[in-house]
Image (cartoon, rainbow, N blue to C red; front, side):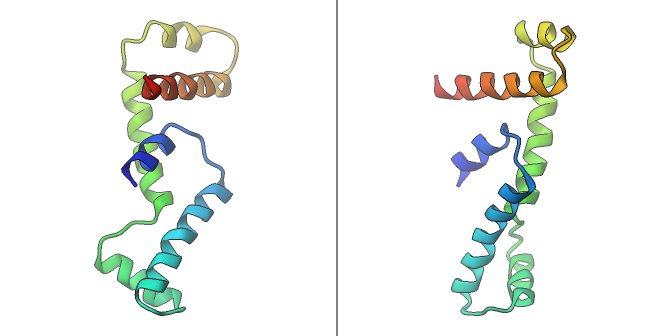
Length: 103
């Protein structure tokens, strides 16, 4: 689970991706407690302090973005100042981060 979260914090996710991850958590709790009632599942998650993955990933992504903007990487300021756009810079940031993880 930690490896999955580490990789996903750097990747832009669509709403459908987040919903799919939340579905896995909800189904896990449904099977664990042998219930189909989502209210019971939400109550159990609350009692175990187990956030949905979409919430956890959103928090970790914000933290990652803040740390990455403060890094001393020489390539990031050049990309940010260029005229290629924010989305392209974010995509390049993600690619650089994933490459650093691979090393």
